[in-house]
Image 1 (spheres, rainbow, N blue to C red):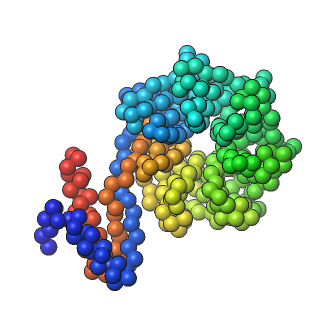
Image 2 (cartoon, rainbow, N blue to C red):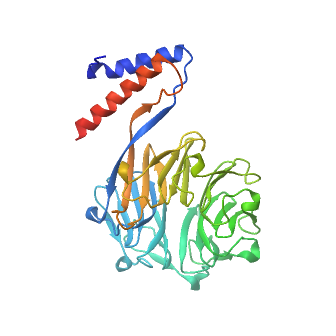
Image 3 (cartoon, rainbow, N blue to C red):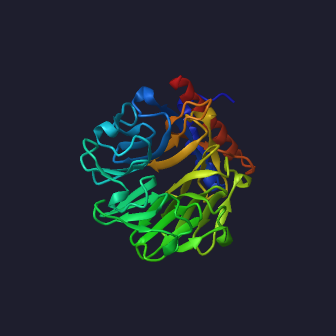
Length: 363
């Protein structure tokens, strides 16, 4: 069948209309086009540990400082100890209300003027340790996941309260943190700690509770749903931790070793040792992205998504470039397999033609 390219989009709409009228359900998976940014673009290092984006600005935590881009990654400004940062090996970054929070081997560093100057908070301010794996802020509170406990400051970093196993955490070695209101989620190597009273007491969830592993490297929550990135798969609870469902390579994940997780708009993004896994159906199935798709490395250390754009922080594993990989949705890919519908088959074929046209145009 010869199909004019100029008629592809109208035909797709017609096929979709026919399929809908016939009651055919067609799953749509957006194809992702990736662009990778490295030190050649101004990043502090090709080993990117953490990523965050806010209002068109991208923040990358690298082994060479905090890198900031205001033009979608085309160019970067890198901040190091020479600018006042506590340490160049930055493991996590977050930004809110014009303030940047950076965490790493030099404690927690905070800039209220877009990186021009920094205030540093090491152990002598009450931080559990100057080795900090994760940082998050909400309102006037700063949360730091340290190797000596989960530290919380309500004085913009001037002083800290540190929570440890003595308060109910599974382990003092914390790898990630997230907070909503008075609820704090602490990812530790001894389970996932949850406090609903600002850290006064904790409930710890482990493999006995249904987690894939007691080693939890990242956590995110939306409402009553909690996503825990573990070294035994992605564990999801839809009832505030009472019970868990664990997703592994058997469900389509690239690796059971996860470094981070993010969820938005019903989509889950899992940063794994084998690449980036994305699910649009709550973990039932996964679409995977690797170096073959344009990622800088299969070693994905963190992930964030906003406005249809995916940000994947990758490590410079031997044989890979590393860097920050940014993915944008292209033409929807429609898979007609299993539907037995002519309309679905036509739609899928036309979608393939359109994707190939766009790739040829870009080449």
